[in-house]
Length: 117
Length: 118
Image (cartoon, rainbow over all chains, first blue to last red; front, side, top):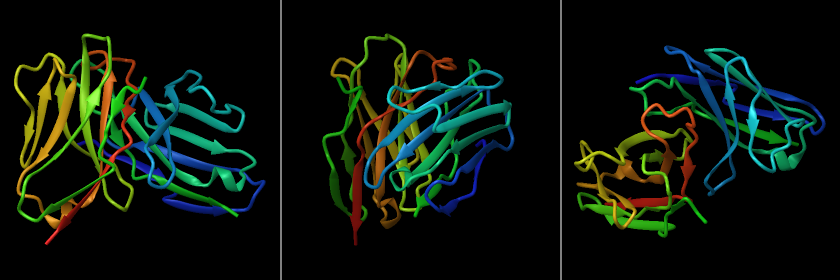
């Protein structure tokens, strides 16, 4: 199957700093990428949907100025957590879709565990 | 209303036995897809099985099968011959729209933690 990578796999940062998480589709062109957030023992919560070359669509309640998403190419999307605070500590997962009539699957990255101290 | 409902927070099954994980869904879109994912403690989301709303037969993938009852809006996952490595969180998800839908987003249930004991 298609491979999606995320970097870093885990990161610890100090409160007030910004953190950038990369999501890459390694062997296919991802027309759409999704960013999810997951707290321990809970389900995945969609934060935003991004299409290559256009602005991301954020879910209700997600601060677009805090969680900056850029999808500059068909293989790379980035999520930047700006001025991180301890409550932003979470597991962030991206997924990518190639779209098209034969593709129904979303391919998930391995996730990034963010800890803000 | 919840798009996906998983009513079993936890399930236990003995090794080599079969187990059914429940999932019901809610949509008014006639075209949709149903997914099951496995999430071990490492956090990665592992795709298990897919069922399209117009698929005539229940989906099967190795030891996984999806019991699709359209009228009841249920899409239960059946794992046959459970293995210790099956212990993980299992999520049911739905996407509205047909194959290749540009809508794309998945709606996830709360998950079921499956524990397989020897």
